[in-house]
Figure 1 (cartoon, rainbow, N blue to C red):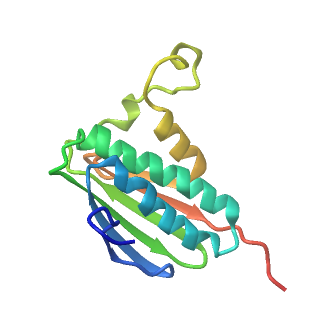
Figure 2 (figure 1 turned 180 degrees about the horizontal axis):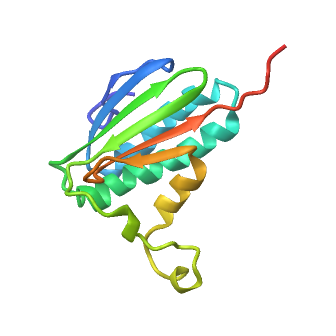
Length: 151
């Protein structure tokens, strides 16, 4: 990866800490997530890698679109901690936050045709733990690896 559209990873090590800070431009999501998931797939839990790919994409999109309102001057920060047991990602935006309890359940009949809430619903169902900071402009998601024992 090179050039002006390269994913600006600050530090990258699949076993340890990952940091990235990107402007609120959707074009940065796919290369960043792809790079992380390619590394995660090598850990032997393809279901976790696929779920993390969806959750990261949704969380980054929400941070850019809803948190930063697509203001390219505002950044989205991703910090990941990965070891042989789990992956934890914290995504923060520069927005004012929101009230997660006020997000409608998209699976309820009255909300099926409404926009909104599906990304958060997916994140909560794909990750093992999801929490927000007090302002809810930061989400922390954890996925525990369930790898098959190697002989």
